[in-house]
Image (cartoon, rainbow, N blue to C red; front, side, top):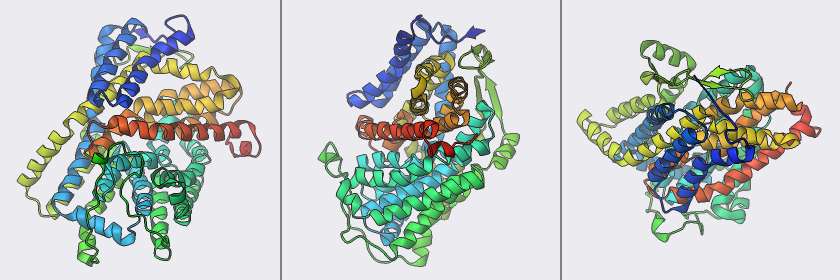
Length: 554
């Protein structure tokens, strides 16, 4: 057995600096634009191993095994989702259905700002609610690039839009993960998150359009933005507080899409925004995608349903795959769990991170049938057959997709290896304890701890599992509501989703913009920080200032 050390250098500041080296190195290398993302991830992984072994005294065999577990976990299930989303996108393009989808969306509105609201925010929120784990960014970025948006616009704006729904993603998986480590009722946690995020569900659509079109461009369509935000925020609050936390995103996104489409039948902006680029913010004219003349002939009913068919199939399959009962059934049919020798339950998480010494699990669960990526593959195969593809043609296209995604899959696996190693070595807990030492300012910095967790792991669920109990313990010691701070971990975490390296690689893969991950990171970083600080400010008000304190559940 090996006990985690949270202050190996005997000085909290020095230990925190040492713990931060791998993730800071990763972000700096990617942001520099001079090092490819997969090389940056590999370099950071090597550094993480050296820090874990020589500073945090983790046995070398454990460090290496933890890294290998992360590599495999990076492909199953995360990389598996990305691979099959891109496969679906490619066959829809090959069959000409994607072009029909472009025309269908153009039939709703040709204004690029309104297309962003409809696709990146509302449609993306649906896929976040149904499956999560990178699916919404991959799908919306691919659609936007097909509509003529620049690679930076498609990638960066999809990442910004995929924030407010994340806490309830994959049918409430982050809330369930938070409940599992805190012992709180998931309904109570979901309700508390639902008293924080609706403010940002209203704000993010305005923020999104302002990032794309500037202040004046945003003001010109404020009625549509308000309709989109309100029709998402109000159902998000109502469903999370009065129904359950599992269907929040599904219900809110469908209502938001419906309200926006109906509103656009009676209102259109005076001046249409037809430019596809991220105006004035793209780094090279060579990266701009020139808009192709779009056939404006109205679609027939058959063409419309043909364009929507693959995505309807995806929605149905993702709803089935995200259902807990289905997952239980699928896992009862096929589950292969591999406890990693000399690693599983051989590491103890100790106080103050855990209430008592707790063994850390290190099991690779190959639940192939219930993987979200498997559902996506099945949806793609069904769609392929219905679009007239032969088995041989689909196999050839899948081979091309693997070659296209190979470097991205390596990158994602390296990212997950870093996250797994930092969790098992206690490096991430050292960073968390630094935030927990902020005393009266803890509501603000505790919220940023959730943001850091998602930035490190790429998952709001993983961040909640990682820091949820620490939030509970620290808030109780400081006399704060543990439910408030546990919820804040999830609410703050959603703003870290846009800068985690895994999501950035997914976005660059979906837009076929390899090697520009640094440009994407530089574009979204300040947005992420600013929004996380605003969430922290709201949580601080809820902790100390009436009437916000009346919103806190006991």
